[in-house]
Length: 156
Image (cartoon, rainbow, N blue to C red; front, side, top):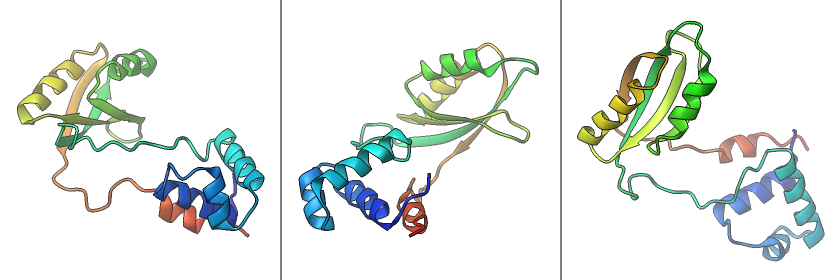
């Protein structure tokens, strides 16, 4: 769904201050409260805005080790059952089906390298998973972000 400049300003404002409230957002943006509410409702209905936080830092929560696992699955296996089993592992915080040598790319957090081994051992026990390759994150110079994309998107 295309967004305009007001949508982009609204998204940026709520990204910076998710507890701001509709009235204060309307005051700062110089538009009617109903306009802010209608646009927020439209952005949420269309799936552009998916939530208002809180954002959680896994390291601050006690999970300082972040890894990506490339997972190869048995040929002909359906991923739906595997995904359900992966979803049941709290340390699995994101998963994507991908192209290339691997079939799934899974982001995992752990309390330590030893704890990571426990999590990986649990993952490889999921039926249909043939092999994993673990990529350990050393640092995150660009954390997950959407604001630059939102700011570049407006059409009018």
